[in-house]
Amino acid sequence: MVGRLFTTLCLLALGLAISSPDRNAQPMTAGDSNPNAIAPAWQHGVCSFHAQLYQYCPSKGLVTQLTIPQILDNAHRTILRPNGGSAFVVGDKSYVIEPTEGELDKPLEISWYQDVGKGPKKGTLFYSYGGGDCAWWSDEVKTCAGCGWGDWTSGPLDCGTAGEGAFRTSDMDCSFAC
Image 1 (cartoon, rainbow, N blue to C red):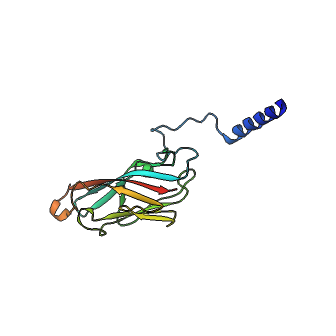
Image 2: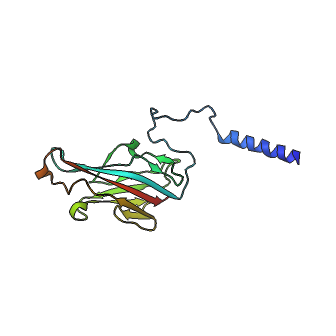
Image 3: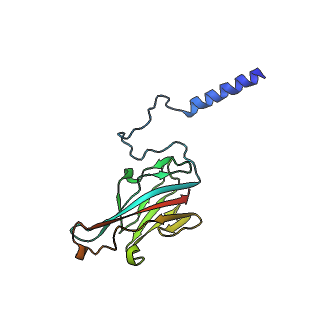
């Protein structure tokens, strides 16, 4: 019995040594070069994120930006910081968060449709995870995903009338099967 226990412990120690290639590696800090640092061995299930939409009027046109500071796994650990946690422009083309080692295992595509909806909610986001495996609008809840979307701080922006510098913001909390 003692021999088996000793052998089991030796094999366990050997397995740990093999699975940790750099025992002297230091954890990444906020100042390190990889702004997309993730939690090791992320937990599948339901991933979630908080997002903020920011629309503003530059000298010409209307710009819509989205900020997703982090995406959390089923254990509520940060697994991804899209665009380093900084805002990215949505609008003319989709923004795709590509799968990479240890992060999301499928792409998350985000598209902004300015002319969908009406009234204060004119314009909406469309999310697609896994190339369409799970797709949803920002104002709906489906079996695989959904968002709770708060009101905009003002109605739709007409930059021709509002002028340069006008803006509005809106927050949403989303979750999806991952």
